[in-house]
Length: 261
Ligand code: NAD
Image (cartoon, rainbow, N blue to C red; front, side, top):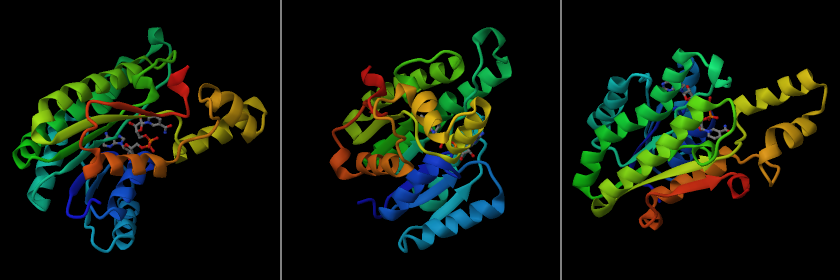
Protein backbone atom coordinates (compact mmCIF):
# COMPACT_ATOMS: atom_id res chain seq x y z
CA UNK A 1 0.00 0.00 0.00
CA UNK A 2 2.97 2.39 0.37
CA UNK A 3 4.81 1.67 -2.90
CA UNK A 4 6.63 4.76 -4.15
CA UNK A 5 6.30 6.66 -0.87
CA UNK A 6 9.31 8.11 0.96
CA UNK A 7 9.25 7.78 4.76
CA UNK A 8 11.43 9.04 7.59
CA UNK A 9 11.25 7.23 10.94
CA UNK A 10 13.18 8.93 13.73
CA UNK A 11 14.76 6.79 16.45
CA UNK A 12 14.47 3.67 14.32
CA UNK A 13 17.71 1.86 15.13
CA UNK A 14 15.82 -0.13 17.78
CA UNK A 15 12.46 -0.89 19.36
CA UNK A 16 9.22 0.68 18.10
CA UNK A 17 10.92 2.85 15.46
CA UNK A 18 12.67 -0.17 13.95
CA UNK A 19 9.35 -2.04 13.95
CA UNK A 20 7.67 0.82 12.09
CA UNK A 21 10.57 1.09 9.61
CA UNK A 22 10.32 -2.66 8.92
CA UNK A 23 6.54 -2.46 8.39
CA UNK A 24 7.00 0.49 6.02
CA UNK A 25 9.67 -1.36 4.00
CA UNK A 26 7.41 -4.43 3.76
CA UNK A 27 4.61 -2.14 2.55
CA UNK A 28 6.89 -0.95 -0.26
CA UNK A 29 8.04 2.48 1.00
CA UNK A 30 11.57 3.84 0.78
CA UNK A 31 12.70 4.41 4.35
CA UNK A 32 15.26 6.66 6.02
CA UNK A 33 16.16 5.31 9.41
CA UNK A 34 17.72 7.41 12.16
CA UNK A 35 19.03 6.95 15.67
CA UNK A 36 22.06 6.19 17.75
CA UNK A 37 24.10 2.99 17.74
CA UNK A 38 27.04 1.04 16.40
CA UNK A 39 27.54 1.92 12.70
CA UNK A 40 28.19 -1.73 11.75
CA UNK A 41 24.96 -2.86 13.43
CA UNK A 42 23.03 -0.06 11.71
CA UNK A 43 24.46 -1.02 8.32
CA UNK A 44 23.31 -4.59 8.96
CA UNK A 45 19.80 -3.38 9.85
CA UNK A 46 19.59 -1.32 6.63
CA UNK A 47 20.66 -4.34 4.56
CA UNK A 48 18.20 -6.60 6.34
CA UNK A 49 15.30 -4.17 5.77
CA UNK A 50 16.23 -3.80 2.10
CA UNK A 51 16.57 -7.53 1.45
CA UNK A 52 13.17 -8.17 3.08
CA UNK A 53 11.62 -5.81 0.56
CA UNK A 54 13.21 -5.87 -2.91
CA UNK A 55 11.58 -2.64 -4.12
CA UNK A 56 12.41 -0.44 -1.12
CA UNK A 57 15.50 1.66 -0.69
CA UNK A 58 16.68 2.01 2.90
CA UNK A 59 19.19 4.65 4.00
CA UNK A 60 20.51 5.87 7.34
CA UNK A 61 20.79 9.44 8.62
CA UNK A 62 22.56 9.91 11.96
CA UNK A 63 21.06 13.30 12.91
CA UNK A 64 21.18 13.96 16.66
CA UNK A 65 17.63 15.14 17.22
CA UNK A 66 18.29 16.85 20.54
CA UNK A 67 19.46 19.64 18.23
CA UNK A 68 16.60 21.33 16.35
CA UNK A 69 18.85 22.34 13.46
CA UNK A 70 19.87 18.72 12.90
CA UNK A 71 16.22 17.66 13.06
CA UNK A 72 15.38 20.10 10.26
CA UNK A 73 18.40 18.89 8.27
CA UNK A 74 17.22 15.27 8.51
CA UNK A 75 14.15 16.27 6.52
CA UNK A 76 16.05 18.48 4.06
CA UNK A 77 18.72 15.84 3.38
CA UNK A 78 16.07 13.15 2.84
CA UNK A 79 14.18 15.39 0.42
CA UNK A 80 17.43 16.10 -1.46
CA UNK A 81 18.34 12.40 -1.70
CA UNK A 82 14.90 10.84 -2.31
CA UNK A 83 13.09 13.73 -4.00
CA UNK A 84 10.53 14.35 -1.25
CA UNK A 85 9.19 13.26 2.15
CA UNK A 86 5.68 11.73 2.08
CA UNK A 87 5.57 10.15 5.53
CA UNK A 88 7.22 11.47 8.69
CA UNK A 89 7.20 9.45 11.89
CA UNK A 90 8.48 11.23 14.99
CA UNK A 91 9.37 8.37 17.29
CA UNK A 92 12.76 9.09 18.95
CA UNK A 93 12.35 9.39 22.68
CA UNK A 94 14.01 8.91 26.06
CA UNK A 95 12.77 8.58 29.62
CA UNK A 96 13.97 9.56 33.10
CA UNK A 97 12.18 8.62 36.32
CA UNK A 98 12.61 10.78 39.42
CA UNK A 99 10.56 12.91 41.83
CA UNK A 100 10.35 16.43 40.44
CA UNK A 101 12.17 17.94 43.46
CA UNK A 102 15.33 16.01 42.57
CA UNK A 103 14.79 15.76 38.79
CA UNK A 104 18.05 16.89 37.11
CA UNK A 105 17.32 19.99 34.97
CA UNK A 106 19.62 18.73 32.21
CA UNK A 107 17.53 15.51 31.95
CA UNK A 108 14.36 17.62 31.79
CA UNK A 109 15.84 19.77 28.99
CA UNK A 110 17.04 16.69 27.07
CA UNK A 111 13.64 14.99 27.27
CA UNK A 112 11.76 18.11 26.12
CA UNK A 113 14.29 18.62 23.31
CA UNK A 114 14.13 15.05 21.98
CA UNK A 115 10.58 13.93 22.80
CA UNK A 116 8.79 17.18 21.91
CA UNK A 117 10.89 19.85 20.16
CA UNK A 118 12.50 17.51 17.60
CA UNK A 119 9.00 16.72 16.27
CA UNK A 120 8.24 20.44 15.95
CA UNK A 121 11.44 20.95 13.94
CA UNK A 122 10.97 17.97 11.60
CA UNK A 123 7.33 18.89 10.95
CA UNK A 124 8.30 22.51 10.36
CA UNK A 125 10.74 21.34 7.66
CA UNK A 126 8.44 18.74 6.07
CA UNK A 127 5.00 20.36 5.95
CA UNK A 128 5.44 22.84 3.09
CA UNK A 129 6.43 20.11 0.62
CA UNK A 130 3.60 17.84 1.73
CA UNK A 131 1.04 20.63 1.28
CA UNK A 132 2.44 21.48 -2.13
CA UNK A 133 2.07 17.88 -3.33
CA UNK A 134 -1.34 17.45 -1.69
CA UNK A 135 -0.26 14.40 0.28
CA UNK A 136 1.39 13.90 3.65
CA UNK A 137 1.25 11.62 6.63
CA UNK A 138 2.71 12.75 9.95
CA UNK A 139 2.66 10.26 12.81
CA UNK A 140 3.91 11.19 16.25
CA UNK A 141 4.66 8.32 18.62
CA UNK A 142 3.37 9.79 21.88
CA UNK A 143 2.38 7.45 24.73
CA UNK A 144 -0.42 6.57 27.11
CA UNK A 145 1.50 9.20 29.08
CA UNK A 146 0.34 11.74 26.51
CA UNK A 147 -3.18 11.16 27.82
CA UNK A 148 -2.74 10.36 31.51
CA UNK A 149 0.07 10.84 34.03
CA UNK A 150 2.13 8.68 36.36
CA UNK A 151 4.19 10.07 39.23
CA UNK A 152 7.94 10.71 38.79
CA UNK A 153 7.78 11.13 35.01
CA UNK A 154 7.21 14.91 34.93
CA UNK A 155 9.39 15.67 31.90
CA UNK A 156 8.18 12.69 29.86
CA UNK A 157 4.49 13.27 30.64
CA UNK A 158 4.79 17.01 29.89
CA UNK A 159 6.57 16.28 26.59
CA UNK A 160 4.08 13.61 25.52
CA UNK A 161 1.05 15.80 26.37
CA UNK A 162 2.79 18.52 24.33
CA UNK A 163 3.17 16.13 21.39
CA UNK A 164 -0.60 15.59 21.39
CA UNK A 165 -1.22 19.36 21.29
CA UNK A 166 1.27 19.68 18.44
CA UNK A 167 -0.48 16.82 16.63
CA UNK A 168 -3.88 18.53 16.79
CA UNK A 169 -2.48 21.87 15.61
CA UNK A 170 -0.65 20.39 12.61
CA UNK A 171 -3.77 18.36 11.71
CA UNK A 172 -5.71 21.63 11.41
CA UNK A 173 -2.94 23.36 9.43
CA UNK A 174 -2.70 20.55 6.85
CA UNK A 175 -6.34 19.47 6.69
CA UNK A 176 -7.26 21.07 3.37
CA UNK A 177 -4.09 19.97 1.59
CA UNK A 178 -4.25 16.20 2.11
CA UNK A 179 -1.87 16.13 5.07
CA UNK A 180 -2.93 14.13 8.14
CA UNK A 181 -1.23 14.25 11.53
CA UNK A 182 -1.98 11.73 14.27
CA UNK A 183 -0.48 10.49 17.52
CA UNK A 184 -0.06 6.82 18.38
CA UNK A 185 -0.24 6.36 22.15
CA UNK A 186 1.29 3.04 23.20
CA UNK A 187 1.05 1.60 26.67
CA UNK A 188 3.81 -0.94 27.34
CA UNK A 189 5.35 -2.28 24.17
CA UNK A 190 7.67 -5.26 24.02
CA UNK A 191 11.08 -3.70 23.21
CA UNK A 192 14.61 -4.78 24.24
CA UNK A 193 14.53 -1.95 26.77
CA UNK A 194 11.48 -3.41 28.52
CA UNK A 195 12.85 -6.95 28.25
CA UNK A 196 15.94 -5.88 30.23
CA UNK A 197 13.81 -4.20 32.88
CA UNK A 198 11.98 -7.47 33.49
CA UNK A 199 15.07 -9.48 34.40
CA UNK A 200 16.47 -6.68 36.57
CA UNK A 201 13.17 -6.19 38.39
CA UNK A 202 12.74 -9.95 38.92
CA UNK A 203 16.19 -10.12 40.51
CA UNK A 204 15.69 -7.00 42.64
CA UNK A 205 12.32 -8.15 44.02
CA UNK A 206 13.03 -11.88 44.16
CA UNK A 207 9.95 -12.72 42.10
CA UNK A 208 9.42 -14.52 38.81
CA UNK A 209 9.38 -12.93 35.36
CA UNK A 210 5.66 -13.69 35.12
CA UNK A 211 4.99 -11.86 38.40
CA UNK A 212 7.02 -8.85 37.26
CA UNK A 213 5.02 -8.69 34.05
CA UNK A 214 1.61 -9.08 35.71
CA UNK A 215 2.02 -7.22 39.01
CA UNK A 216 4.65 -4.58 38.31
CA UNK A 217 4.93 -3.58 34.66
CA UNK A 218 1.41 -4.36 33.49
CA UNK A 219 -0.42 -3.27 36.65
CA UNK A 220 -1.88 -0.37 34.62
CA UNK A 221 -2.60 -2.37 31.46
CA UNK A 222 -5.93 -4.25 31.81
CA UNK A 223 -5.27 -6.85 29.10
CA UNK A 224 -2.05 -7.88 30.92
CA UNK A 225 0.01 -8.19 27.79
CA UNK A 226 2.55 -6.09 25.97
CA UNK A 227 1.73 -4.60 22.61
CA UNK A 228 4.23 -5.63 19.93
CA UNK A 229 6.26 -3.41 17.64
CA UNK A 230 4.51 -5.21 14.75
CA UNK A 231 1.12 -3.98 16.03
CA UNK A 232 2.40 -0.40 16.18
CA UNK A 233 3.96 -0.81 12.71
CA UNK A 234 0.68 -2.08 11.26
CA UNK A 235 -1.22 0.92 12.64
CA UNK A 236 1.40 3.30 11.19
CA UNK A 237 1.03 1.62 7.77
CA UNK A 238 -2.78 1.94 7.97
CA UNK A 239 -2.61 5.63 8.92
CA UNK A 240 -0.19 6.21 6.03
CA UNK A 241 -2.34 4.37 3.46
CA UNK A 242 -5.16 5.91 1.38
CA UNK A 243 -7.66 4.32 3.82
CA UNK A 244 -6.30 6.61 6.56
CA UNK A 245 -7.07 9.88 4.82
CA UNK A 246 -9.99 10.92 7.07
CA UNK A 247 -8.21 10.16 10.34
CA UNK A 248 -6.45 13.32 11.48
CA UNK A 249 -5.81 15.10 14.75
CA UNK A 250 -6.47 11.83 16.58
CA UNK A 251 -4.66 10.29 19.52
CA UNK A 252 -4.92 6.52 19.13
CA UNK A 253 -4.24 4.48 22.26
CA UNK A 254 -2.61 1.06 21.77
CA UNK A 255 -2.57 0.31 25.45
CA UNK A 256 -4.71 -2.74 26.23
CA UNK A 257 -7.30 -0.51 27.91
CA UNK A 258 -4.94 1.50 30.18
CA UNK A 259 -6.51 4.89 29.40
CA UNK A 260 -10.06 3.47 29.62
CA UNK A 261 -9.68 3.41 33.43
P1 NAD B 1 14.22 2.54 22.33
O1 NAD B 1 15.14 3.02 23.38
O2 NAD B 1 14.25 1.08 21.94
O3 NAD B 1 14.41 3.41 20.99
C1 NAD B 1 14.65 4.81 21.02
C2 NAD B 1 15.27 5.23 19.71
O4 NAD B 1 15.57 6.63 19.78
C3 NAD B 1 16.58 4.51 19.41
O5 NAD B 1 16.67 4.23 18.02
C4 NAD B 1 17.63 5.56 19.80
O6 NAD B 1 18.87 5.39 19.12
C5 NAD B 1 16.92 6.83 19.38
N1 NAD B 1 17.51 8.03 19.96
C6 NAD B 1 17.87 8.26 21.27
N2 NAD B 1 18.44 9.47 21.39
C7 NAD B 1 18.44 10.04 20.14
C8 NAD B 1 18.90 11.28 19.62
N3 NAD B 1 19.47 12.20 20.40
N4 NAD B 1 18.73 11.52 18.28
C9 NAD B 1 18.16 10.58 17.48
N5 NAD B 1 17.72 9.39 17.93
C10 NAD B 1 17.85 9.13 19.24
O7 NAD B 1 12.76 2.96 22.82
P2 NAD B 1 11.30 2.48 22.35
O8 NAD B 1 10.72 1.73 23.49
O9 NAD B 1 11.31 1.87 21.01
O10 NAD B 1 10.56 3.92 22.29
C11 NAD B 1 10.33 4.62 21.07
C12 NAD B 1 9.27 5.70 21.29
O11 NAD B 1 8.08 5.08 21.77
C13 NAD B 1 9.65 6.76 22.32
O12 NAD B 1 9.20 8.03 21.90
C14 NAD B 1 8.92 6.30 23.57
O13 NAD B 1 8.62 7.38 24.42
C15 NAD B 1 7.66 5.73 22.95
N6 NAD B 1 6.95 4.76 23.82
C16 NAD B 1 7.51 3.56 24.17
C17 NAD B 1 6.81 2.66 24.98
C18 NAD B 1 7.35 1.30 25.37
O14 NAD B 1 6.71 0.59 26.17
N7 NAD B 1 8.45 0.83 24.86
C19 NAD B 1 5.54 3.03 25.44
C20 NAD B 1 5.00 4.26 25.06
C21 NAD B 1 5.72 5.12 24.25
